[in-house]
Structures are given as C-alpha cells and as structure tokens.
Length: 233
Image (cartoon, rainbow, N blue to C red; front, side):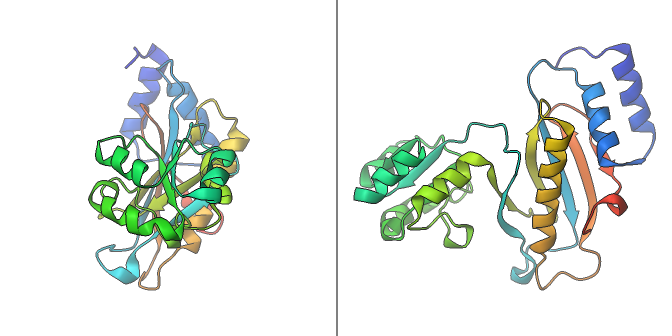
C-alpha cells in the first residue's frame, strides 16, 4: 500500500476514534482525501440486513443494473449453439461454446465474471455444477442467466448489471463503481443498489431490515452511512 501523507494519517486516526455516521456525499469526499494508492480503487458497499440466510424465506439474492456501470471489464462466457451462439458473439460475449466450452472449463479455464446459458444447454452446464457453483457462476433462470435472450443477457452483464447475495452473517457486499467516477455517478449506483436490496426484502425478514450501511474503497477505511438520510430505508 502506498505511504499516507500526514493529513491522511490524521484523518484516518480521527475516523478510528469515533463512530460518526456520515452522509453519502461527505463519505465520498473523505474516501477521496484518504486515498493513498495510485490505482483506481473500487468503491465498495456493505449492508447489514436483519435476515438469517440459513432459512429459505430469509434469503436475499438477485440482480441489479448500476446506471453508471461498474468501471470493470466484465468477462462473459455463454453456452449456446447455432444462431444463439452467433447472437452471443455479436452482443460481445468473450467466449461462446457448448461441449467444447464445458471441457475448457473442466481444464481450469474459469476466468469469467458471468456465465450465461440457453435453456437447452443446461444438460451440459449441469455437469459443471461443482466448478461453477462455489464461484457463484452457475447459470440460474431466476437471475436471468438461463435465458433464450442471450443478446440482452450479455449486454446487461457488460453494461453494469451485478449480482448480489447475502452472506451467512446477513451481510451483502458489492462494488458500486470506481474512485475515478464522479460523485453523481457513484450516488446513482449507490441509490440503485440500495433500492434493489430494499425491494428484495424476503417474506421471512422480521423487524428492521436494513440495519447498517458501510462504504469504503479497496484500500481505505470503512465509513458508516447515516441510514436516516438514505431514501427507502
């Protein structure tokens, strides 16, 4: 990690001494002031939810399209044949195939951010369950990654659609953009992500649903966001 300036060290020290809640704009300003690296860090959100995902009726999972994109080059693999394979390639998929793609993945080539499949290819994809499942890459019709409309699925993945899934402790993590994004772009992504989580509230959630929201950069401190200032929470 790059060496911090005296100002950055002072700010970081003050942050560690209190439990202040920050407005989104103030938090973004502080993250920029504390940035000590040269690379374009990811801005990350963490939400503590009042759910226990061990229960099926308290699982929170879905997709959300970030209006400002992610700032990341998303690699997409598509299982399809014939015309659908051609459509996927035309839409910008990085790799398209059938049994040959399955064999390539079995050989260890799994450097993808999203795997999409047409319904007729699930017999082939199913044989990769033990490889794709643990990486969160297994195509799922509920998430729109098993679909005959491969053109739209590829475009969505490339343009800023991300998947979210609550972890065991009731926490959801996601990257919502880059430090190089403008405040307005990051705020738009923040609002879209929070709105998607609120709308995904499961039937089994009791009491307060969104308990805490934190914001950080890849190498920066975590800042607690004042949820009373967040619409819909």
